[in-house]
Length: 326
Image (tube, rainbow, N blue to C red; front, side):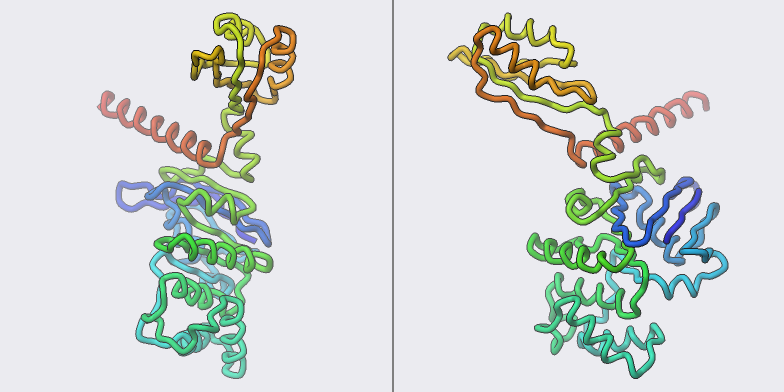
């Protein structure tokens, strides 16, 4: 459905997007994730034909953005970060207006507006002006204008920005509902947005793509370690020594040494190793009492921090080396 290949965009000396490549399959909800200033919005503007890349190509199906800009725009519904709404217009008037802009035949405009009102749950608000609506309902109206021409693809840039927790949940559910029939790119820096809404995630940082995959795949490709917590009643030095001898344990850290004879450890295990059974058997063999043995896997937040922090460190080192060379 969407193919982005080696896309690069400069603004003066700043490289906003640096040779970014990825594909989006039909029916996917792709989370386009990155910190502020990472190049997310610039990439979205290139895909939607608002900007032309300095280098690289984007195709929507078989259509190239350089040669088929208008035709591609007809296939895309775009919700920019700053929602394009006219506050003094009524909800229905605004949707009829956008239907006309999208060249929907006059006979189909009212039925399409009715469909949008139902899909976006705007029934209670249709008699109001947009300026009278809450931020959550304004976002619903904005989504309705994205959908009114029945596009194959939706590009949503920070769709829940500034909403309260209840509104965020409502918009996420609406996006998942729409995503059953559309291909969606959801551009955000909010990690739970991707975890709860998207089927796949891309992480971009400093204009470069640094990760691509499902949440589970990204976890597997990260450091690959799982953290375990164990609380054992037994002589601290002996417990610590024998745990360190287990080949299924990579590192061991004493967290708590209480007076009642219990000691609590943080354990890191290598990739594809689960030390739980070894720890249990060791405790049974030595008549130790275990009151805790829990596992904590890496989250998308951990992966995001790891990837963007390491990339930022590399950039700083390159910049420092360049200054010394100069």
